[in-house]
Length: 166
Image 1 (cartoon, helix red, strand yellow):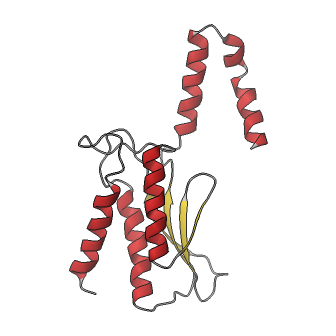
Image 2 (image 1 turned 90 degrees about the vertical axis):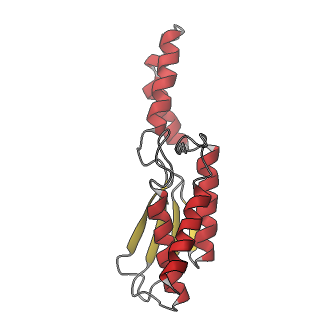
Image 3 (image 1 turned 180 degrees about the horizontal axis):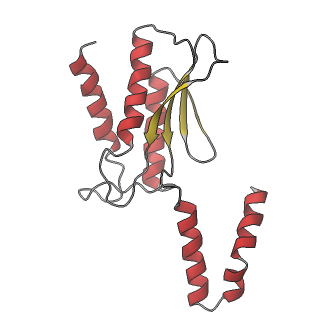
């Protein structure tokens, strides 16, 4: 396969993914756990499947594709990046790393190469790590503004209970 074909395929995947934004024409807004992030995750899973990877999504929303190696007991080689974004972020921030990792898997498959160890392509969710924390702070602020102090005061206890029951 010529380099132009490879880079063309990467560009096509990136252009497709950049459509999943809440702010078309104004940078990429693909916040974690939103409709746009869900659509991006589903698209990444389809690309991973096409590349011959065993695909799963964990409870945190990370999309993981594995190409089995000759010796899966060895530490894996992992590539990827996040697929979510901040408000009005760069169109290709994060997704470029995820798409390129999938392209490496495609190249291995197309060339008939079985790696010595597992190759893992990953699309991480919630790169900033604060989607849940921001929601907690907003709830707390609303409780304080409405005079519902008892709810705000016990928010930490309630969140700890919720995390134990899920």
